Length: 221
Image 1: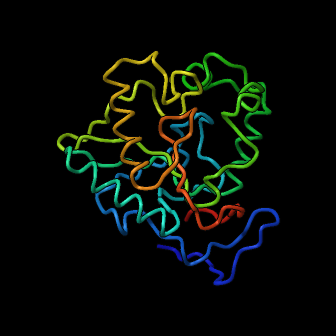
Image 2: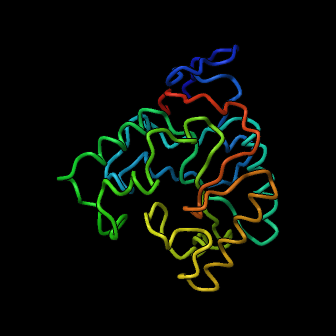
């Protein structure tokens, strides 16, 4: 693994931070059976290409967040489930890439798959895309649950990153079974100390995160 430059002191809070402190680590160090499938490290995402800053399929979070994820993994293991990590730490330059994509009205190649009900400017207006992301603080992650027996995802009713009210955790437009699967994920995450996001069933942020005002911009390598 390529080491990150680190800074033992408190990171600056003015603009994106360009070094990661030693408190960051790879999730599989404490959760070895987690599946790492960072969608922005490839083309299987709403942008349709690898996103700036994602140079490796490597799941990084702050240590308190990873320790909490380990508790989630132990919880769901009792039901024969494992975690699939879809996004963890997100460099600030990736968020800027999202902004450039959203401003390009000519690029609608992924509209049918990811935002069929909206036009690009509405994604900002409605809060699906923001100028800053909690992921860049290092204690937010996107994930789903997978059957340990055969590696199939639990059916959550929508794919990851579908910009739609169908993706809202409380949506009753998905089936009872899909709602139950969402509740299972949310219950494990909340018990471990994460807060959910009301617009995305897959998105959670650690309560009391260590860097609440810092937005890091170190590429994932």
